[in-house]
Image (cartoon, rainbow, N blue to C red; front, top):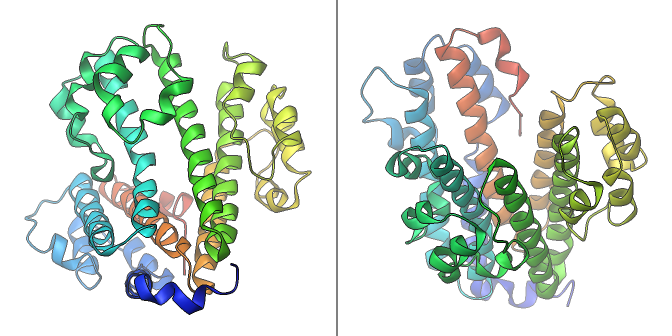
Length: 351
């Protein structure tokens, strides 16, 4: 019952919520990012990060450093935090934490299938997979020729199995089909996660509904923009939108018939929360859209920490840490390629 979580939440969840809030305090601040932006090379970045939570992960790395090393070690910190919380969790929190992994599992499946299609080495592809999305039979994905084989040989024993019911076709895998598979899987995953959070009730349901609805709406906009000018029909496009969110159902009807970025903008400006995002862009441009969405997501994730006795803090912390790793990757690339003037183009500040 909403409002009564304080009576029982701390029995099983109090310690882990405190851990998550402690991790959140270790996220980089605007002052840290300003210092990182002054760095002349990757060793300077390593030196600055040595005073943060990443210090112990980077301290034994020899020079010269590479961007991939920094990202890999920072991701290792994220994975260690996640595993520690998962080991301590009891039901239903452990199931909630497992749901956070499923998005990475979907990305890994798509990465391996796409790489195999382009005849890349499987071992090389596995090294590029996100560690949170790994599962035992991931290497055998390379043998599948179509969706049915992919399901029957590999994915039937993974948590993704229920999400594949909508993508089981005998069509051969090509770039278009793989992208449709990714979006169909994400739709099923988000809807399932949304229902699970609703079942939990209380503050968790309230806050996670908002965060997942935003994610569903962002994906609807991205699917629309990326499918403009392709052979994807309006009906097929509409099938890829999640059945919840602020845009559901009337916004989806309008997005399905959009034929350029300005029409998408016209639809989104009818919804006040998204009006501010599109007002940051001039007409006809979509390059800044990703950053604007990330900034809005970070704002909502930070608000999740304003309430207590709910599971959304774990989701918010993981997402904020992932955004921080994207920021560090961008800064490191800009420094390594001597493009420091472009650093502020993609950095999303948090606190």
